[in-house]
Length: 295
Image (tube, rainbow, N blue to C red):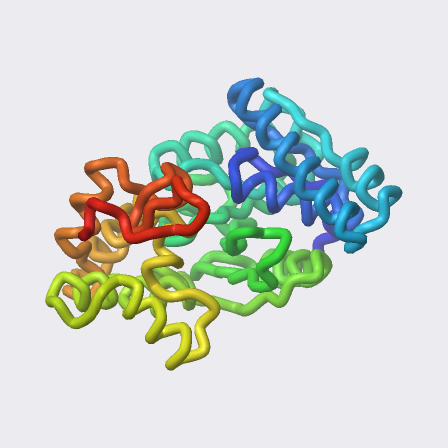
């Protein structure tokens, strides 16, 4: 099985920085690449802040924090990933951008290097087909926040070699995560089941079944979920949810994956959830209240 010693992460946003953090914390030298210095600095500062908070809460020792930071190597140069055994892509959910990135990487990295995508909804087969190594391509779908969430979906397509899949699966386990094996179906396991649930909650509100807080409360107390579907949507990002629904509907052509009118309007109006301060809830005060957009 392929031995993974050095890891590359392309993208230092919320997902990329989280993946880089857990990789370095597990002992891997980790190259973190971004396209702009400001984005790179922000990603590294976010990692440092997360680790500092863990030290303050006595969940992590200061020496472990420092050694994790020492294994992180930020860069703006894609060529710095040339010696990586595994490169994980965590850039914007745009097929063209991902194809362009893997095309560049193919001309830089050794033939043995495994390429992985953190995509939550795009086809692994479609991504792999545009590379020079479809047999060395796999999906590694982490969940946010990466340092906290234990699940990783390890996704293989028809061309993924057994050795590639086994190495990726073992790598996810080495991070302290609990990996599951998935076939290459749009949405994989979690989003295939979760997205229709969230969209049904929106439709229930649109139909006057109950208020947003009561639907959230009902799912929390009735099903034991840690948060209701509207709170979860705001946490994930309503822009992200909207884009995922488009990808999944295009794939399956099933009504349950279609975006409800309210979600589309909120996306267009910039009500994207916690990241913008307003979504289904308004987060500008001490406690969230239902947003005026949906009252």
